[in-house]
Amino acid sequence: MTGIQIVQSASAVPAHTVVNDELNAYMDTSDDWITTRTGIKQRHVSTGQTTSDLCTSVAQKLLQQAGWQAADLDFIIVATMSPDYLTPATAAIVQGRIGAKKAFAFDLNAACSGFIYGLKVAEGLLQVSGNRGMLIGGEVLSKLVDWHERSTAVLFGDGAAGVLLKNEPSQTSAFLATDLQTFGELSDRLTAGYQPVNSVFATDTTAAHQKYFEMDGRAVYKFATHEVPASIQRALQKAGPLVHGIDYFILHQANQRIIDQIAKRLDQPKDKFLTNVADFGNTSAASVPILLAEAIQAGVIKRGQTIVLSGFGGGLTVGTQVIKY
Ligand code: ACO
Image: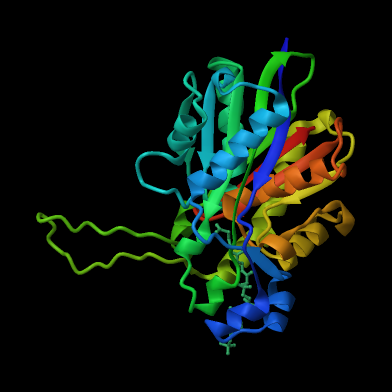
């Protein structure tokens, strides 16, 4: 029998941090508003590093920590909504830079649920296509933010993190149960990067590029506080007797109020919900793995513990993965 294990985790974020008060220079906001509405105190912002730069740093750290060679990898997935290019995939750039010659590489976009969706895809690949995979969530959201638009600019940050996964002879798998849901009818509630049809054959060339985030914040808030608890409950029900108690919840770090509300709805103690949104803001597909890597490195998450990972965001999407670390 074989089982999938999480071998290593690592993160890489830009060194430059921007605290709430600094944003006043670009928009009418305050530390008090941002802190009370979101819990965010600062975010890491790239001064030049691209998504592939951050993801390559993560990939190098992961290989070094595990003592693996790049040539050992069978695949590389990067979950991102802020790739360097539409093509090539960010994962292909990373594959080339680290020299993972055997690995096929592709990006996956499920916005802030991207890392959770990526875990499910990686699990499937490990069962049919090799036994060593790398999954990274990486974002440079600062390039998708209008830095004069206070309703979105204060929320986002840049960063990347990931895991190495291995399928090996074992009685147990780290992957206990998954729940993924997409609500495409709500796709216009959170958008960025619209690219209109504007070729010489287009009949209407008036549509404009939409470079920056546009979000119905209240709709996303309502979605997250209802759909994340429902997704977690479905995943735990699927896991059934495999779960004898949850040690920690790692939710997408969008907003402290959302996390607190979800804890309340699930009737779980707040201290089981690890958070770092105060230091990183919302890093989309990178937020769950950044927090996971941080908690593992700090010794908070230990081998054998049961952890609920859950993300939500653009799509709108929601996803939960229950793991035994
Ligand atoms: N500073 C000061 N005032 C602000 C700011 C700001 N940064 N932003 C908005 N305001 C003002 C508004 O203009 C409004 O003023 P008005 O009443 O005079 O019109 C007032 O504050 C209230 O604005 P709301 O938008 O109603 O504030 P709300 O309490 O809903 O909080 C927030 C906004 C924080 C965005 C909240 O709705 C939220 O967290 N939503 C979820 C967003 C989210 O998680 N998105 C990410 C999804 S992940 C992904 O896929 C990328």
